[in-house]
Image 1: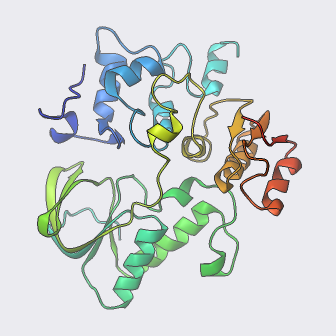
Image 2 (image 1 turned 90 degrees about the vertical axis):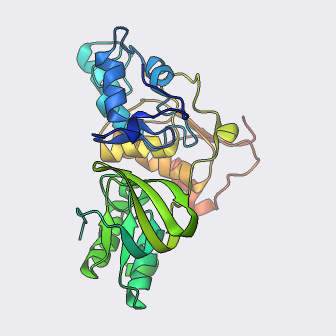
Length: 93
Length: 217
């Protein structure tokens, strides 16, 4: 689980930040990837990803990062952000 | 020029490379301010118009009707031709006393000392308290910015038959974005007795075959 507390070092403050995905909540790509792949209990839905990382939970409410998240989470969720990728998996809509 | 070398000092730091930041940079440069740095948190300069793939932008400035991305491209090209530095993938995390900006980029956390700072971060989504689209919302509820980003920047479709809530200009931008993505909204809904925009624009809803419901919530 990423550290979400502000009184200790957040991931974006550590070296090797490739990309900040959610700017309101300062969530890095590294944290998103870890929540999707590197965890013992990976996020299986957007709700799960929100709870683990706080991505889209800030003041813009996903205005900026939803598109990038649709890209980063492709194939990871039972129900995808992009409905075209659900179609590929044969999930009925 | 898109800057790659980190600058530690500048005359004016402009936060945001959207229309406001870029036009301010151009105006300052033409007025003789030499060392200007435009800070942009995204990987591409241009701001919101980058994902407003529809018309009508730039008529006042370029005397032509452009799409958002064309307008953004023109603005950036002009800034670059004047030698204005745009620092991409750079987020401002704090504005300290005396123009000391804390920044984070792929090179890590660093500081930039600016004699003057211009905040050009533009318009923002209404706060969470007014919108409540984050939190426990179900998948498939988005604001227009998210929809535009998906359709125009990433070619992704978040829904097929959405309901558009509101009839402001941005609601019609959402309608155009749906059209582009092959999405067919079920309706546009407005709680007031009249749409928020003037008639030539709301006539657009009829053109797209989207029912416009007023006095409904």
